[in-house]
Amino acid sequence: MTETSGYNTVPQTKTDQAENLGLKIMTETGSSIPLLGADSLECTRDDRLLFNGLSFELMTGEVLQVEGANGSGKTSLLRILSGLRQADEGDVCWMGEKISLAREDYYANMIYIGHLPCIKNDLTTLENIRSLLDTRSQAVSIDKIEKVLTRVGLEGFDDVAGKALSSGQRRRVLLAFLLLAQARLWILDEPLTALDVEGVDLVESMIVEHRNAGGSVIFTTHHGMQLPCEMRLVHLGQ
Amino acid sequence: MIKAFFYLLLRDLRLAFRSRHELANPLIFFVLVVSLFPLATTPSSELLREMAPGVIWVSALLSVLLSLDRLFKQDYEDGSLDQLMLSPNPLVILVLAKVSAHWLLTGLPLVLIAPLLGMFMYIPDEALGALVISLLLGTPVLSLVGAIGVSLTVAVNRGGVLLSLIILPLYIPVLIFGANAVDVASDGMSVRGQMLFLGAVLSLALSLAPLATAQALRITAAR
Image (cartoon, rainbow over all chains, first blue to last red; front, side, top):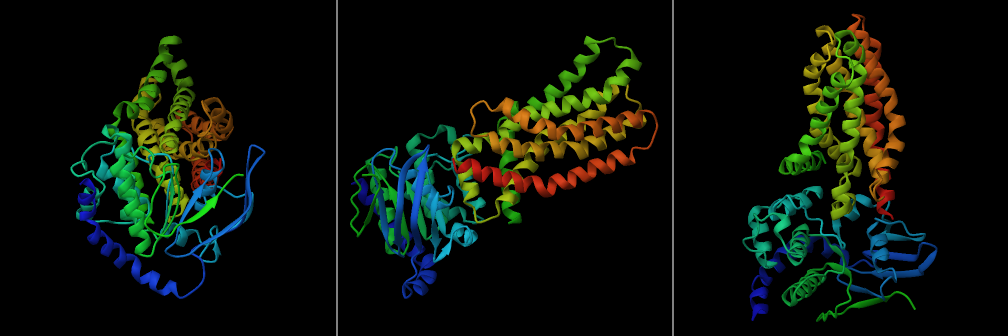
């Protein structure tokens, strides 16, 4: 019955998120400009073509899974979408504008979480979350952080140093950051890595909730993820 | 934006104070190298006084060079660097915060201990001021320029040699004018020219190096 305890906090967080996201999103639903658009992207790595002519559009409230075998370029694609990597050909557009031009607005509204933990060994959980939020210039009250830490199953870990956390717990710190950052678009590279069954449920419920609040998600995973909502697929490789 | 600068600066300072052994390394290296010279050469006051500006400046330069590695290494390895690049704040500001923290942790302690080492090396009292000011103007340049080299080599395994090759040529003007200022001051002459040059180099580095570093980091991230 761990699931039920996990869902206890759901309604609250949901309204929180809806409040924060709601206003912006309401103005958007009428228009047909995609939140994120990929236009004939091409990516090569060490002279090997990973993909070319890849185009798709992600609308507000859509969930998109990128699938493909190991080495098919999923991480490269997500890094290109986040602007960390340059596509060899093609453009990525945020609300109709190239991300290189809309950088500030895009990064204020997008969170990318990759393979690496982003956790400092010598900082406590609370300090780690704070410093991640600080680089985004987001001030969040301690109560809110505590609430989210409870939600991700790290209650009482706020004063524990990063080096004392297990890899699963580190991922959970990032999930807390994800919830607190209030971005409209989540780009998640293998969000289920190192998480236990309960953690997988948590990520699934987070994604569904984010979508219901009007956010969008792009993710990759090798684990089966059953989302009780519509999901689009982009398949890489032959 | 200003807040993001200070928060990142404070985070780096806090991290450094939590692993103090690393914090003391550049300073210990600096003191050791300078104090070994009188042992290895004839410890006559004239000879030491003659060598002092060069010895102190070279030791300071190497000490900064050795500490550069930690500027971006950890952030690169744990993924924090990606998050810095995905910040809505300009990357240049965040780079400047990291470099400032690096200087406060390595350059500033060297500047503070330098007068003591100067006295070990028989630098006349009237030249100690020139030593401190030349280091005060020169060491930030070492951190700023070093950051460009580190951002290019952070993804390279054991990039230490490469790093030295890239940035040592850029360090040389600072070394020449810094050591020369102390030398000239020991002879009781005016060091205005040297100080103005160091000041000019510092303004140049302060305005351009963070831009170059930010760009180099983006190239590194696009691996």
